[in-house]
Image (cartoon, rainbow, N blue to C red; front, top):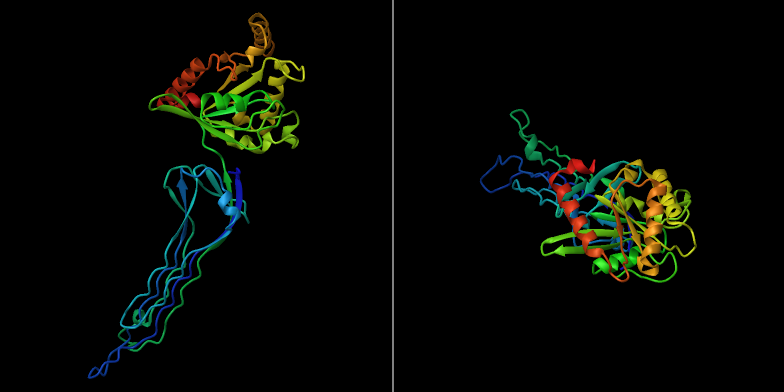
Length: 343
């Protein structure tokens, strides 16, 4: 399924039903009096989080949503039926903006969490409401009010525990294929990943986490070069960033230069992103003799003055992945118990 992370829709709540003008007329009851009932409220529209959805593609085919109008009141003090509320299911992680004002209205992050985006119109009053000791036969009613109408912009930020960073062809897609059941495209040329991929990684029974792979970043991404900058927003909710570095880059650049290029673009995009916990993972160690890749990694860590955790793996050969997965799982479980560690 094509990944769609932004959609614009129009939502229109239902109109309230009008009040009724009616008088009781029965045989042998000469002074029946007013009995016009109120109308029903118009239906409201809610967005509801659905963990079974991971894209906004459905909104490409339906862009206008209308809730049901309230029914008008009737005689015999019968109130009109309320309009049905409309519930629109969206993926977890959907941000809701008012397209006209650019105001952030809300954030759908919980399963089955209803979030009201437009209020239905209120019911009109029947003439029975206006009866008084000095007005025995009122002919006054009110009309139901119109429901709210809004142009919304929906933006999806995928909810993942771990985000993968790296230049094109660093091996992010191969890595996510090796540790999860996700099957992103893999090829021996850069920019094979064109949209985010999610993979569920199972450390063992009842212990798992979600990894997000975004298109590779290149130098100048903050100015619009390449694809990755469009999807960096998906990493803002992750708890841990895994920075993947090719120990033997195809363009003969050094791993240190690759790391600095990514950090530079991250700083331009968001200071919050650069402050997230980040681990360094040297990939493709199977392409070099052990003494060579160890020398490259040691020199790189020293050159960039890296202080955090470092891992050495081959995603293609699935070497040294188990320890990395277990360490990530332990980190996430500890962070869940003590969220302040992520600050």
